[in-house]
Length: 263
Length: 262
Image 1 (tube, chains in turn yellow, red):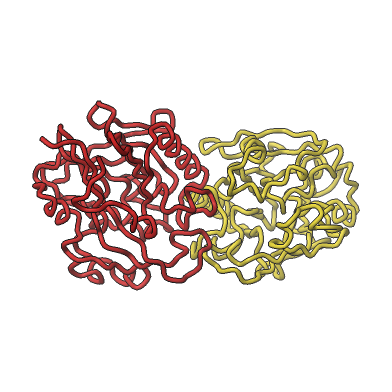
Image 2: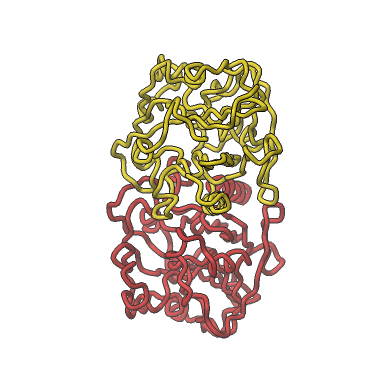
């Protein structure tokens, strides 16, 4: 494998959600949000981070999700599914070596079951919580999303040891960023020219980065703040890395998407 | 020497946006009570909760600033917890313990007003109050708790040991109920006729007890759920009545003032 290190942003379509799903007390009005994933090319093997929505959602959201499909309205073509997007970049899904799952909320599980030879990395607490959520979280975890034949590896990152250096070369670091969910993980990509912080839902949008408003969803508010600070630390150490937010439609048009990669 | 009894003390009301109490509840106005409690006990009387600080009855804007436009107090001096205790012919100097559920600005009224009391607070709550996350900053008012001469007594309740039995007789127990805040504590009082679970803001209102809607404010959602369940166990085991922290509808049905629970 001779691929140079690069990150492709994958367009996973959009969802229309109540504004208050992203911004605390943001009201019930419609907000369009992107649902991106990432393909990281690495000489030692390709990595997928995030997964967007499951393929089934493109075909029949209500059949697959049930009534929550009326609250999170999905706009997604089958070719926007993460596997199809990876193929469109001339990467064989069977050659993806790792899939890093930020968390198991329903709009982040699209990769599961679609990369047959990959080792799926998930935080142990996320896996456990997804199988026993409290009543208020039950709606965002769909067992059919993650109870699929998959080679799972459970990570036990914690506040004292919050990092996992995937290839041991500092280029792909998995960072523990709980708060949005119990076991949320972000990725820091130490690219040579354009280092990236792939925040996932640790930072949904710019307003959270700026600490102007809390997210519309969290399990632990203080952890959200701590995780943001952790990612800002990485950003600074990398000399002002670009932070890619989890669901920011305003940032989205400014990003390189698809074939035009960050390197 | 007094017989065991619990008096609900009227602390006036706050007019708040509905979403402060109910998750995604919208900006419409909601009036909530801000009660405190006097527990008569043979070994010494106890105050739980403190409602609003006395300063709000005198000059709300001077004390809270523009926050009064969003969270608007309606409170007379006679509704301050000290006045309320005096109105029940109890000398504030005779209060032995002041128990603090947490230190949000509408629960700090008792601090410094009972000169001989030990003021019991969860250690993490006071620590957090001095250094809150940015989004919690406006609910902690340093002048409320950063006062001279407070006889703080810290408790370190944890999930594995969540109970502090004030007199060691099983009658008045602080129960660790975090989630709403980092060191929130509720009170269980094993009265003879009508045991009480005084939830404080661990359960603001009935819909939280029913798990129909999450609170408008929480630090840790799962902890909040765990704490509600913890209190429900006390309620069931003691055949207790649960008093919610800010439920106007329930408040109208409670005995208040001289009419005590026993």
